[in-house]
Image (cartoon, rainbow, N blue to C red; front, side):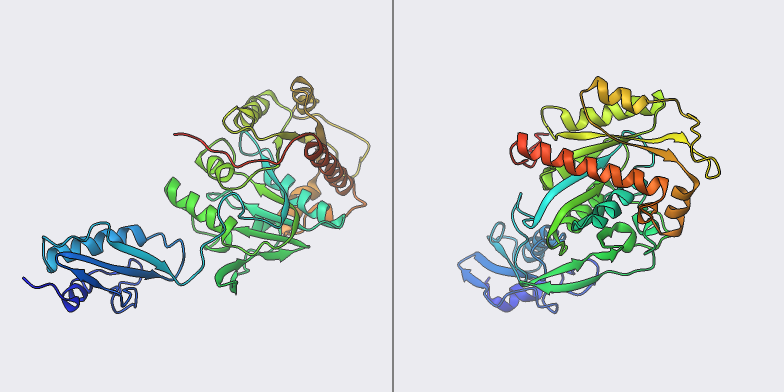
Length: 368
């Protein structure tokens, strides 16, 4: 049987691009470079994006279609090359060349106010004149859009150096991205781990973060593949661990510390933040009630020879600020505003100390 280009094209018309349902020939994905040498066939597929998540599946479907509809003896496997209309993203670890410091804000468990600390730390840093970015890495429970009052904002794409880049939303001087900008706020994100990890990689590497002094990453609670994805994608300068004072929270905080400091990950700990350190009624600003115990986070920091970066009290305005989309750190004259300003100062000192004493962080290479 004679093999000719139209026979190959007719077979490829049976392959449909996932999502659009259009066949790859009509979609213009088959390059006009079909070469036939006896039974050997070679050609190229063109993708719109350099990292098209469907391309491997399409190659396999194209190979099978040619063997099924053209000739089962055609030598096609391994002979389909990929071209992209868009330049590839920068290679690891240079995804964020204009970002000076990348800080993980993490906790061993949920409910300790990690996102609140992260959001207010970001605002406090911007008020000190720094360029700050914030990535909400909690794919399954994004809260940053709510805390900054930008839940209804939609992100835009901008072509830069041939690449389509996501433009972060900016609020109170903080550039931010969250999966919450891409899904309805009332919808649950029900994804397998690989989908969540890929989405996170896109928010990091396919966005125009520009120049940043500090890039804060609000990690999800616990220790998961999301955490591994991040440390394998970008070099973390250091981690800030958030905990509340009671023992059950401190036990989980120890696990969070262990994850960053184990010899495979080896991310420096910048220090600890003790959140909900005490309750102070607005009408009695001098009073302190240690609802969750006293100085638990302080003791944990001392045990591990880490800096205690801050003790943040429970004050009604913190909760109100988060719910209303106006972080309390905006009010620098309030008790909580001053607490977050001091936290920002201590983080700046800790990062400076870390950069003076340690070499440039490398991305983690974890062998499965």
